[in-house]
Length: 293
Ligand code: R5P
Image 1: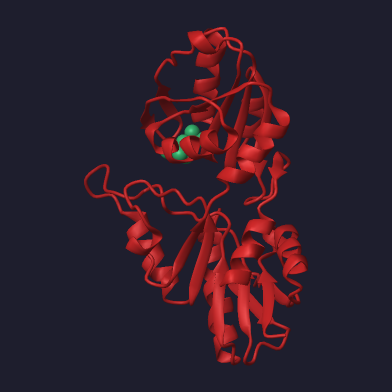
Image 2: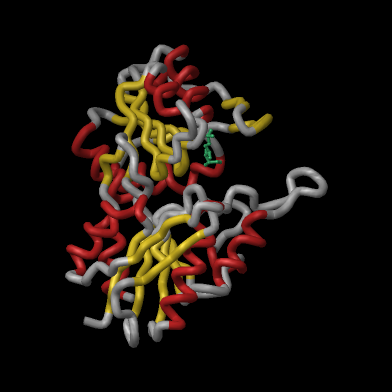
């Protein structure tokens, strides 16, 4: 067997599913911290002449970057042929320009840095807004997979008469695809972000969809403010309780509970980031991609 799959502890569940489908062995690696919080990595599985795949999402990227770099460098020193990274969620893509003078453009710093240590990267629905392709910032082959048809399948099987709602212009790329696959109408709203936790969403014109089930679709749910503000508008407009679908369940602090406290019928996410709201399984998408690769 020429491939071995390793994982960062947070991503064990997804990595096991991918390895099972590919019939690739799972490697053993210790990631821990010394008492002074410096990172310790030890690879316990033979990697010489093997193609190594590390599954590690890049939510909480500051915590994971050093372990990923130490892992990749160690695997190569031990003779690995290649080290690829499966990062189902890819962080540091939202700060993709200098919004205020003097700000770091995170995407343009993080991506070239990570690229120095890995041979390729694959992710799911990266937040590509002002960058149109990952390779505008990544200098190694970087592939984007899409969960739109998986989301559409879930909607088809679980929602009666859906109308899809995208909360902002950036969500248009996901919402239009999901709507097409699910054969459902869609509306895209406008969002003004005033701060990390303050967003203003335009009032949706939904009078002709009163009998429909509103399905809010976005890539990332972080503070959930985008979803909460939109759900409130839909509720004020007399719509049925909203189904909220996010690809990446970041859910900082108590944001998941905050969203559940609104007029929502259900919150559904994919397992790119492990969370209790995970329903849509992306392991098949990743396994299929690795097979082709
Ligand atoms: C940004 O444009 C993204 O597509 C999401 O709408 C955003 O990241 C959601 O963030 P939050 O949950 O903090 O409102």
